[in-house]
Image (tube, rainbow, N blue to C red; front, side, top):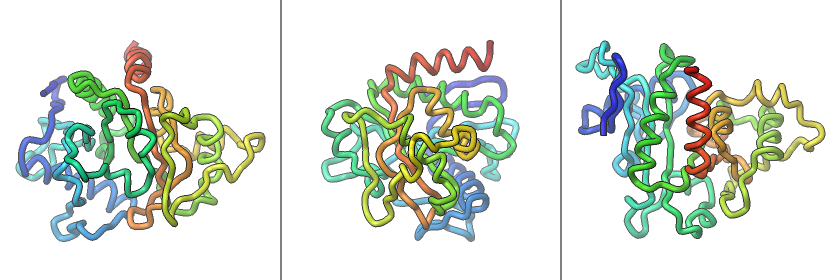
Length: 258
């Protein structure tokens, strides 16, 4: 599967070079910009990697004008893990932070999304739309019915995130059948501000652009947030029904390019 649009190419990683280029971009964004760390992060080689990389497909947005030999051509990445690819006993990455038993019990075809990032020079343009268009085809070709994954706020002080977390809890919580729950000692309640006291403007200003885009596409959040101190983020779990997403994605894309 490959798509091209001008100097952009979108495809799945094919080999170790491709994966390494994705991990190099992840290092620039998650480690250098956001202060993430972890036991498998290679600071000498500038690679953000973990034990789940081998399970995932890695969607790459490639700018063909940049230097592939220097691992500089990958300017956007997404990790994609269809539930059908898991062997018995294997778990999704998100299950370290969230209880997915309700989602699993639906029996629907699921896709986990993660490690989404875009090179700083390509933010605010069409990069994410290109990746979503590829993702839509990926979802259709595999019969995916539900997409989910952790989405992050920078920082681990939930008091500073009280407004956006409460806004999400009160206005965008998933239906019970699709609702996941944060687990463990790092789980935090999201409704620390009463519904009537939420400042919507402050909440929106404090919400990362990617999370807002997911909401516009019909995404929901689960119950509770997970404070990931190693990654220096506070995570919510986003869930999307792909039938609803595909309709909204089309309208969203038409608004951007109409």
